[in-house]
Length: 506
Figure 1 (cartoon, helix red, strand yellow):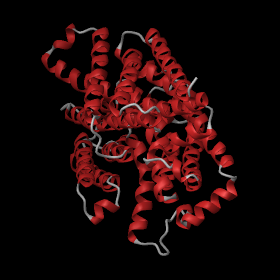
Figure 2 (figure 1 turned 180 degrees about the horizontal axis):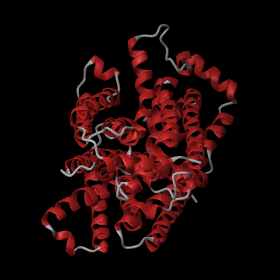
Figure 3 (figure 1 turned 45 degrees about the horizontal axis):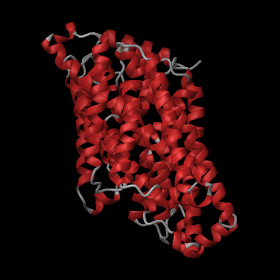
Figure 4 (figure 1 turned 180 degrees about the vertical axis):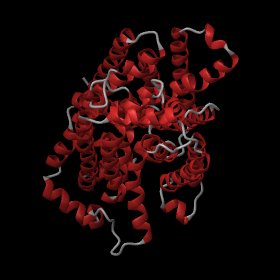
């Protein structure tokens, strides 16, 4: 059999496995929206941790990050450092409180509904605005996954970009549409384990084939010593260098506001499960990130010795090394890990976006018209599945002619969520005096600043990642507006104190 046949067999087996898990989840999911959107709050720590990691680390981990380091060196690794630290803090301080608070706040199943319940927002504006922001930024985020899928098949199988993208979109949509949150979560676990194995195996085998660690370091040093420096090639720290490092570290701020990640906290069995989940999740993430960084460095060395094999696109360096160094079937499994990274994120984002459409937008309209009285839970589940379909189709349309790199698309969406939702999540969990108007104006300010900053090109906006000004403006506006609009509510204070007590990990 040809190499392409072996790789195709491996990919087909992977696809069959994902569809089988989706079918299993479909059989386990009840016809109610809570089960479809949050798996009945029954996730084990290991499942929640691997699911959060896999849904977080999309195609950028195996394609975007290695590509950036392959081109610019270790200075791009600050993103991985910032993310690892941010993930640890998120699991440590946000996870147990969010699990407890969402249960106390009307058993909320989405972040927008939690904000509304926690802040007693009777205007419904906060929930509606949150739902719209989720739709806007997640459409771009899902689109980045589609772009990664198209590039994957173009590089690995010689298929055209559009065909590969549509294939991945269709299979991901099927198991997510039927399996819901549980389907996305269980496939995430399988995909997370596959990604982990690939990110450990590829750099180890690549180092051996490149002549060992010493040879790799010497080769890269000869090309440019700055490639192995976390501070780049500059002899002195310039504003651009400092801004680049701070901006990369600031990716960690984004964790507090990523709905597709923190929804895993809400689905834990108990707040105490967050401790075990943190250890598993951060450990998985640290080793996976090291594997991605090592792959890029080894790639610089390897392709300097084999210039005829150098990848045409830096973002495919992981794919190219896997195909060169492994037996075609094993290479196919490694390539499946890249698909796993892409599909795990897409599926999680589709579920959250669908929940925003149905739980946070459609239900609000239905309540105002009185039509909810005639709708049953199974109807809402059906509408949720239709929401998955609609968002997937829009994302595919946006990804047909990609104008940006995978990392650029992810960075834009990550900043949007981090700057809008992040500060409000923290304030709702740790500050009693946050008002619904403070949250609304803060969230809008953060989203607008991040969006505009990311679209305008000036020396300052190009140097500083948009999540930083967006996050800061959000915090300031939310606190200042709350100072003028907060109204004391004894019931809210009692609920806050009970949630804090429930969240204490004993």
